[in-house]
Length: 428
Length: 190
Image: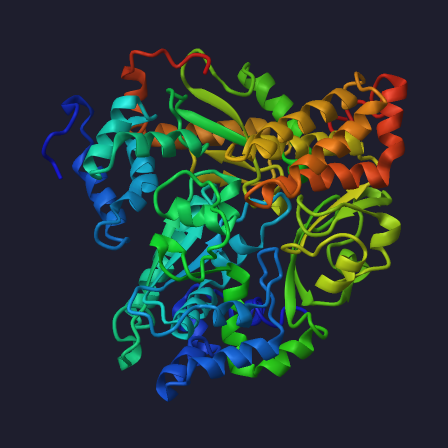
């Protein structure tokens, strides 16, 4: 049942970036049908609601519900935005979707625009993947020339213009309101919510922001029905999901499997552990979600609810696998540096707190830590989490708390021994 | 938008201005500020880095206050506010890359180039930077050259071949970065 939605046809049919190949496997048929039959938006939203599709960017918010929030019948512009600013350590699925099945994303965005009444859309692409941006520029042009984007699409009175916007290196722009600020040509600093983008988004107009994978699921759902998509996964966790498996596995990469697939199956697909080493820990949803030790992970199924119950989050499905050789303190030190480096500086608890977290973890790693540092780290984390405009603050505190919770003895060994017990574990 | 340009010496080529106009056209009328990120990228590619005068020029071209362009240029980390080498290498060392030997790759790059992160070789050929997640963790360790070309799976044993390939590629297209050598600021340590 792998490769059912996003990567279907990929192996059998060749290059789906060729619009004719995409059309030959039923591509753009969902959009054509909707425009031909002028399907009411409410009907399409109901279909998406019934599919159980939840936002694939990390938050897992139900997509149909999100689209129903856009006010209708207002005399103003409505915008549709795709969040392709994929920079969460461990996440690399959107790049692959855009490179290997770009028209499914474009078709999903065009359908989304039809549903919410948008006439303009932007695809905000991560700065570091220039080649993907250039690829999407060509793909949008091809879709426009084929009549699937632009004015009066396929002879209907629906018009939708899609543009790619290239980021330039800021993790925070993956946060949707920071992304909107950035699209307006500003620093990517998150906005207070409310008001939410559904009422005040891009240029203060109603806007919906969805992830690449979310949009790419939509044509499939409308072609095969919401119930069918739901049944691919499990209740409340509809469909398949791309899992980006990185770290100490033999075959790192993206694997599309039904939600609810056991972690052990996913690990097998990725070739299992490299060099015969034992699994030590997994970050199941990208660097911002709590780490889980091997013994918990091996019992889990990969879906929003099961991972949530185990005390972590599915996030964007970014599975970072670590073997027994990893020094958890050094791993945490690198993640803490990331949040310190990428804090936008707007909220004092995050701007100052992320620096504290990094400096204290670093001194523990270097053998200069004190016993009270562990409590200090937890305290600083608690003073960031919940006191910032956006979720980056909580994201910085989460690894610190969960690494200490599950691997406390390693931190204590660093402090008591006055040095790292596995020095240079990333250099040998 | 050509009137009252602040510094004629900074003027961008007709190709660069056409590329900026193409970006401006992506946004609704009056929202040309949205194109500032692309405009700065285009200017940086032509000039090698973003001097203050270049940023001011871009702002004037887009009819936005200069401070708006400065805010953007200083916020996003792919903009270079000082001259960089002909080949700017940005190595991701974040956790997934680190698990796959990025620190060893870093050590090898530093050894072969004789510079640390954030430095440029004395001959102005190479700059080495430490990057944050590129979204390519299955390709770890990953390196981006001159903000555009990503090289994947650069393990320490591949560093020498990688450097040679980059050097050869950029010899074939010498035009882009030549301005940085004309700069009055020596492209030394940044």
